[in-house]
Image (cartoon, rainbow, N blue to C red):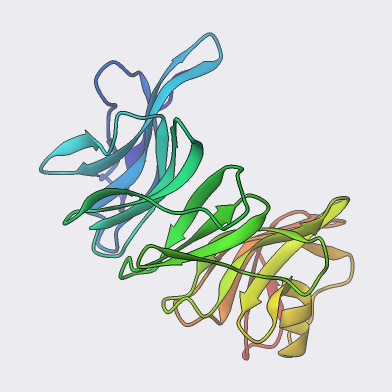
Length: 249
């Protein structure tokens, strides 16, 4: 069934954002701080197959505009709406990208030695820092230069999904070939289990709860959200240093 991206900011404000020309479906994945810019992907959906996905930037003044005609999707946008991060496919494979209102479309470099796909998942409020992954490893791009977010766990894989305003705290998922769990990266610790990081800051995780994914972190790097698995499967929010407990929603 075709779907539509929408914008909502309170009672009576629901608004469908439409699609790019030739498409019948769209999805929104990010919004600017004031809600004036929405980003996502537009595509043609037929017979349970998605065709020709294209990243878009939507504004009330200009409507929905494509960032590129290549197969792509926009995953995140800066607070002012002028920087967008996502992924796109070209002749070399799937690559992370950064788009700016001033400079246009930029393919972000992959980590050295990784010839697999790369993707950008989140951007800092000012748009200067982007996180995602390249091959099996989480990556951080600062003004277009890439670095790996390493882990002390041997053979670990990771996927960065969110970051604090200054990029000092990055969250996502980390795993071995047989398992995975919510993770957090800082320069002193590397990419480690979020449960261990919270415990070291006095936050107690209820028995039987596994933090599966951490999808975002607050601007100051102290509040984490995501979802759990195990005996309890639901969303969670955990804040350090106070209150010193995980609040499950």
